[in-house]
Image 1 (cartoon, rainbow, N blue to C red):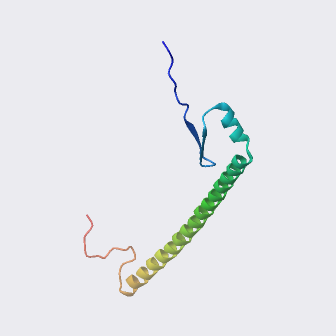
Image 2 (cartoon, helix red, strand yellow; image 1 turned 45 degrees about the vertical axis):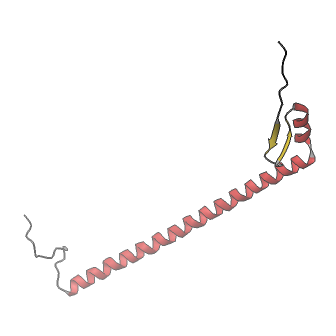
Image 3 (cartoon, one colour; image 1 turned 180 degrees about the vertical axis):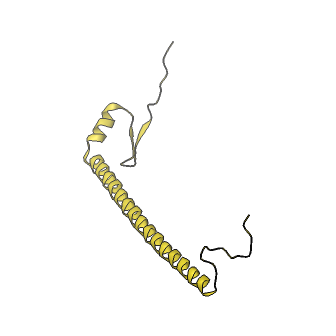
Length: 104
């Protein structure tokens, strides 16, 4: 039985965004080429920069959230103090009960 011809196809280089022949020699020559090495370096640099920017943004958001939490806590404490002052001014008992309902 005779063998029939099969195309090897092409290989896509993710770094260079080009098609190269799918054989070991072409792949090796491409991977050792100046353009490919520059594209790989550029991609790695971009990844590092994006990662650093993402970390910076996360730290900024965390700091902002802590500030919001601190302001909310201060506001809550202030509201409690104000409510206690109003209750004392209106003659409410110290234990916080209104005296309208009987405890069983």
